[in-house]
Image: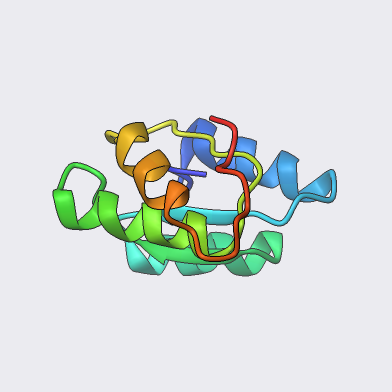
Length: 98
């Protein structure tokens, strides 16, 4: 869940967690993000999705955790990069549905 440190991103992350989803929240503000992750019982990834490094870190995390759903509320997300990386997955898992 991107942009989850406040506003609608936070509310979506909170609702997903309350409905039993394992949620990893992504945002630039480490202090706010840590607080949100603790509140909802989820993981946290500090990343600026306006940068190539941030997008790469987020894609790597999605693939490492075998994510089923990505909610991109903020920043840019290169879906092609995610699919290229998942296509080379050594365990043969299907790419996440985006």
